[in-house]
Amino acid sequence: MGKQDYQPQPSVNDDSRPPEEVLNAVIQEVEAFHRNFRDRLSQDVLRLQQDKDRLIADIENLQRQHQELQSQKSQTLSERDLAQQRVWLKQLAQILANNLQRELIARINQIRVESDQPLLSGEDTPMLSGSSEAPADLAPQELEAVLEGSLNQTFHGLQQELNSYHSDLSERLSNMQTLEQQVETLLETVVNRLRQQLNPTEELTPDSSRVLPPESGDKSELKITHKPKPPQAPNAPSSVQVGLFLALMSALVLSLFNVCLRILLKTSDTPKVMFGLFEVDGVITPGLGNSLLILLLRMIVVMLLMPFLATFLYPAVWSDIRRFFNSGDSKLMATVIGSGFFLFLSQVCIYIAIGEIPTGIAITIFFVYPIITVLASWGLFGDRPSLIRIGAMFTILIGGILSLPNFFGGAAGNTEIGVLAALGAGIAFAGYVLLTQIAAGKLHPIPFSLVNFASIFVFCSLSLMLLPDNLGLEVNPDLWNPIIIGGAILGVLTLLSYLLNNFAIRSAGAALASIIGTSGPALTALLAFLIIGEALSFKQISGMGLVIIGVGSMSVERIVTC
Image 1 (tube, rainbow, N blue to C red):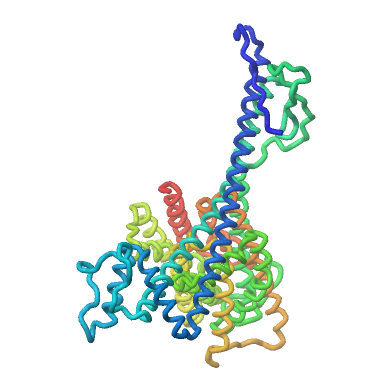
Image 2 (image 1 turned 180 degrees about the vertical axis):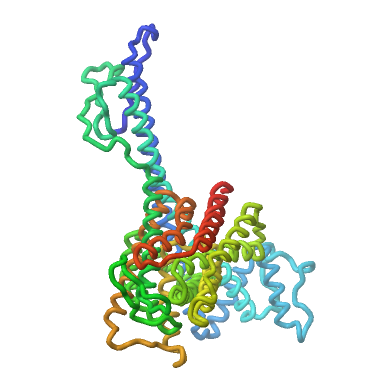
């Protein structure tokens, strides 16, 4: 049966209608609009899903046809096949577009440019669409090679456009579903407020009432049944508030990760005291080889658990990855793998830095990467920085200088190595950010992250195998168990921070979540002070504050300008 909207019948004297009847009529119209709007959204989502399935089927069909053409190419043609191929080529040449004809002429002229004059020219050659047969002096094999190259190029371009459209369609479907839920919530809230005005003594929830048609034939009245409202909190948090809280928790977990890494590494400064109760010493010395080992242990845990987490967050992750590797887009592959390589370098450098200088200082120096990102974006993409960004860059630079440790207070060479490693980590992370911006929109963030993690695992494994002996591992055989346990803890904290940040972006948006992420240096320094008693000077705390202000102002400016 079709849906029926109940609308009040006009009366002779509208002024005599009671307020309850008017409000009932308004409620009816709002709920009818709600149902119609929800039905339309559901139909649009269903139609887009069907379009998506049809596009996937078309892509698979095109891939199958392309493979068939490639297999036919490898077979040896007989004389009769050559004759049939010549006829087919003549027919195909008649229906090619004019722009394809010009490309064909240019490529044929290149074939005999060394021996003869150009076979064809744009001025004296008729259009293929208007000619009845191909040029007489054109060899069938040459025409076949040129046409096949053009068709292959056209096919690859079409396939890339379809893949891009499919990814964009998936994101639009997800956004439409979210929009539908928000609209439903908004309409239900409006209806409930109208009902509360009608019956001030009774409160309603979206699921606590329903509108029924009247028992009699008169459609000017509606029968509303109510159910008691279940108890709920008086001030329920909004989705943005939940997202900001999750972003703060993600930054807190990431800061805890940095402190745990500091505890795992042996340091040359004063012994670390856990919660002011007992001293702890690291289980592995800082260095290139040992940093690669810790990173490898961490990535083993990540690669074991990340596939399940990625499937939970984005069910289409494996189909997107399969299309990514089958697309043949070498530029996109180089961009994604290159971003993973820069993230790998950044992780190795920050591990070395945390082992040599205080944790909060290492993270603060690392946060100078926005300066590199802004300058590189200006040079590569022409994104001229605004006055706010320029001021933020100077603020970050001054803060980074103030937060530098005393080069004469520690062991010889260790402080310099830590500062340079932290700065190198920031520069490498800026490269990761730039390549991520280039690949934005071409691959969903979750499969992008999965490929990044896999790239880090591969680069770390190869580096350990190719590392010279003088830079290799220095591990006490009796301490392998705590080293493995420490690497597992770091891997779990990595995935927990990633999960919290993903949900924070879904609830509050990437821009607001990034503002909370700028508190990383302060949270790291605070946890390092509370857990292992790592104190900073007033000058270093001031520099850290300037860096946070500078990075935060860039994030706020990005929100305002978008």
